[in-house]
Length: 126
Image (cartoon, rainbow, N blue to C red; front, side, top):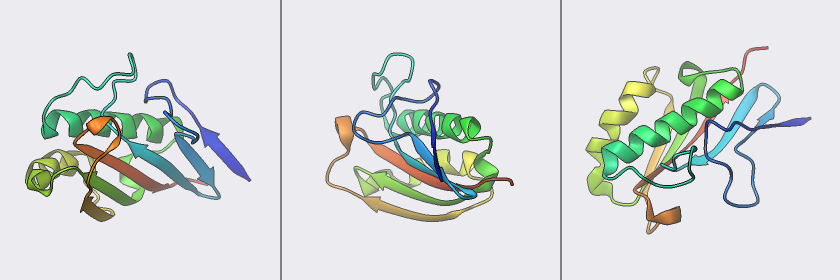
């Protein structure tokens, strides 16, 4: 049985998808971009500020599912420019202290022309 996770503390889905889905003991969160959930706008400029907003959005979804960053087992990170890799990592490592498995790729473009996007898979407690 699948359970949808929704929170107003993270941006609403901007397409036909859910913020996150729980399947069994795992949370599968959709990619989060640096949208301010209070107004639906991308306000952050620069990779560090955008990465911080992304992490806040990811954290809100984790919290809504009853988990946190320590239980994330896999992340997929998308960067608009691989030149931002080191700066992105500087923000990323503050949140993902347990060092989950990760893929990080550069892509041609991201929604709303943002600089980064992060999706996560997290383990849930029984």
